[in-house]
Structure formats: C-alpha cells, structure tokens
Image 1 (cartoon, rainbow, N blue to C red):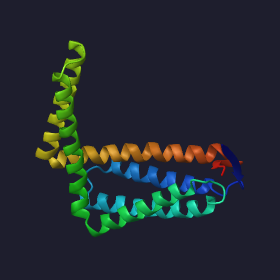
Image 2: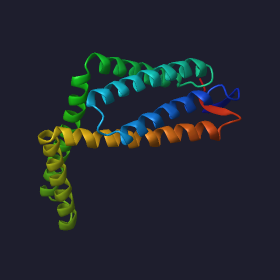
Image 3: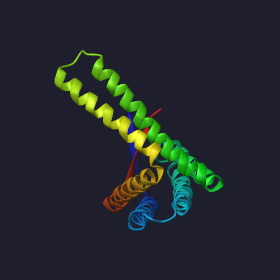
Image 4: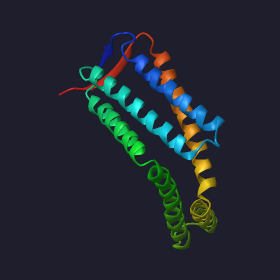
Length: 188
C-alpha cells in the first residue's frame, strides 16, 4: 500500500528547520512585544505566511518524486502566499476578520452547547457541564465583540504560543531525521 523512499541526507531537513526557526522567531516577537502595533503584527504575520509559503513550495517541488502527496505541500505553500499577500493588501480587514471569526465561532459554539444541554438525553451532570461550557463560550464571544483590543491581545498571545510550539516541532523533526528523511509513497 505505502512505499517508503528516502531523500538524500540534508536535502529537505533544512527547509523544515528554516520554517521552524521562522515560526519560533515570529512567536517570540508576538509574546515579547504584545503592545506592538496591531498593524505591525499583521504585517509580520503576512511576511511570515509568504516566507513559509515560499519554503513550502520549494519543498513540494523537491519531494514530488519521493512523496505521492507532494501536492498537499504545494497547496499549503500557495495558500500561505495568498494569505500573506491578502494580509499586506488589507491589513485592517485581516485583523478585524480574525477577531470576528473567533468571536462568532465562540458565540455559535456556545449556543450549540446550550441547545445540547437543554435537549436532554444525557445525565444532569453532563447537561450542567455542557451548559456551563456553552454559557462561557457565549460570554467569551460577546467579550471579544465588546472589547476588541483585549481580544486581539489574547489572539496575539495564542498565535505566538502556537508559532513557537509548531516551530519547535518542525526543528525537532529536522534534527531527528539528520541522516534520512522518509516519505510515504502510494503505490499505483
């Protein structure tokens, strides 16, 4: 079903390491300077998305003969470049959209949890827990709509933590596979 081929040593690991290092640096900047102008952070994210997308494109073309799903890495790269460019063209809309999406999702999730809590079918303890979770989600979403500056600061911190963890995983993966990098290949 899967055939595993090995890439030449070092051919791909430095791409993963570079992507990881750029993610870690982005995350550190987001955490160390949370008071940074929102637009500066938006532009920083746009640059990160473009650089990460370009590195993914290069990696996709390098693994196309080794990895049958290489096109997924290509799509990841194209999406990163597109998101980065949109961020540069519409920085204000980008920041606001992130907050609106998170707030809307929280309110919608909370309403669904509240409906589930009151629909029955589970124990009263489960209904209470689901109801509390739903109420907290709705309150969180409303607070994001009401206090966008505080909400954006929290989003910045979450993005920073995510970028650092993701970057560490990429760098660790690159260091772990210092001799060969294996990719599954679907047999035809």
